[in-house]
Amino acid sequence: MLKLKNIDKQEFDAYVEHHPTKSHFLQSLAWGEFSKVKKNLTPYYLGLVNEKEEIVGATLLLQKHLPMNYCYFYAPRGFVIDYNKKEIVKEMTKNVIAFAKGKKAIFVKIDPDIIRKKYNSEDIEIPSTDNAEEVFQTLKECGWHHQGFTKNFETMQPRYTFRIDLEQDLKTIENKFSKTTKQRIAKAQKLETEVKIGEKKDLKEFYHLMMLTESRKDFISYNEDYYETLYEIFNGNDSTAATLFLGKINLDKTIKSLEKTKKNIQDQISILPIDNLSKSAKNKLAELTRQKENTEKEITKYKEAKKEYGKEITLSAHMIIEYGDKAWVLYAGNHNILSETYVNYNTYYEHIKYCKEKGIKIYDQFGTIGDLRKENPRMGLHEFKKKFGGDYIEFLGEWDYVTNSFMYFIFTKLVPFYRKLIRKKSKKELNHEIRNNQ
Image (cartoon, rainbow, N blue to C red; front, side, top):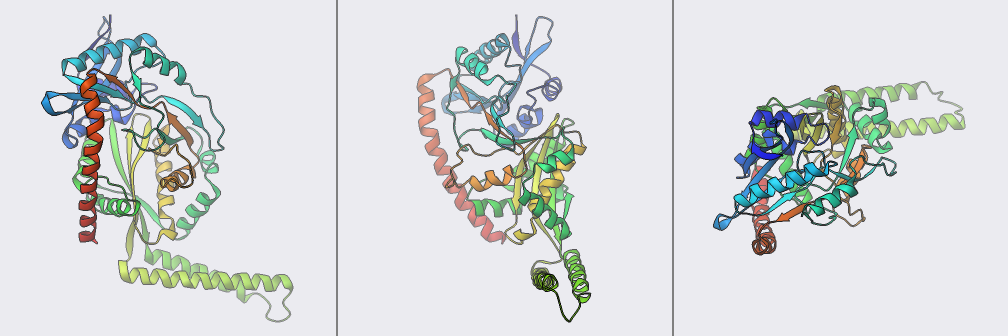
C-alpha cells in the first residue's frame, strides 16, 4: 500500500535531483522556496512511499490561494515518477487528489515532462522513449482532462523547446550549428568580444538588458527584485545554481583588432605588381580594396560608439539554471545597439561549452512555438534557437483534474479576463520605467 506524505525538504530534493528521467528544476526545493517568496504560493514537498517508507515518487505541489478559502494546485512539469508504471501513476493521482480535496482545491494541474514528439536538427523524427500515447491514455483513465495541443505560449510552461544533447562531443555539437550561426560566432570572436560569468552585482546590468528586450519584443517579464531573489535562492542551495553570462565588447580591443586586419589587407595590396596586372590580380586588388574600405568604416563606427557609450559595453546577458544533469537557458536580454557584433550568438556558444565542461547532459533552451507560420510574431525566436542544432521537442501538454466543477468554470472564465487587465497595467508601468532609465 502506497501513501503520500510530507517529507523532509532535503530528502525530497535529493530524490528529485537524482531521478533518472524526470528531474527538473521546476520540481526542485529551490523553485518551491522561490515560488513561496516571489509568487505568493505555498509549496508542499510530498513523497509517495511504500510500506518500508521508501520513496517511489515525489512531487512539488504549489498551492495558489483563491477567494472564499478556495485554492488550486500545480505540479510544474508533473510528478517525479516513472509514468510507464501505471500503478504508480494511479496511486500518485489518487493520493494527490485526496490531498487537494482536503485543502478545498477546485482543481489540480500538471504538465508532465513527457516528450510527445522529437525531431533532430535535420527535421527527422526521433522515436521517444517516453511512450507518450500510453501515458496519455493512462492519465485519461486516472481522471485527468487534457487541455489541448496548444501551439504558442498559452500554457504555464512552454509546450515546445529545443534541447541539445551535451553527451555528444563538442565538434559534433558545433557541426549541427547552422552555417549562419558559425559565421556569426566567428565574427564575434574576430571582434575580440568576450563572455564573462557575472556576479550578484551584475544583476542590475542584466535587468537593464531584460527591460530593453521586453520593450522591443512587446512582452512583460518581472521586476529587478524577482531576478535578484531567484539568483540568491538558486545559488543558496547545494543542488541548484543560477549563473549569469555577460556578453561584452571592449571597444579598444575591437578597434585594435580591426586596425591589425586593415594592416594585413594593406600588406597584401602592397605586394601586388603595380603594372600589367593580370585579370585575376585585378580581381584580387578590387576585393582587397573593398575589404579595406569596409574595415575602415567599421573602425570609424566603433570609435564613435566608444565616444558615446564608453570603452566596454555589455550587449548580452543570460541566466542559466543548473539542476541535476540538466541546464536551462531561463532568461536572455540583449542591448538595442551593435547587434552586428553578434555577441548574443557568442554568449550562447560559451554557455553551451560551459555546461558541457561541467558534465551537464541536457541543455534546454526553455521554450519555443509549435505554430510555425511565417506570420507568427514568435517565429524569429524559434528560428534563432533552431540555429544551434538542438532537437525540437513537443511535450504532452497540460492536464487538469477537476474537483469542483462549478468553481472551475468560474475560475477558467473570469481569471483570464482579470489577467489581461493586469498585463495591460504592467505594460504601462514597464514602459514608464524604461523611459526613466534610458
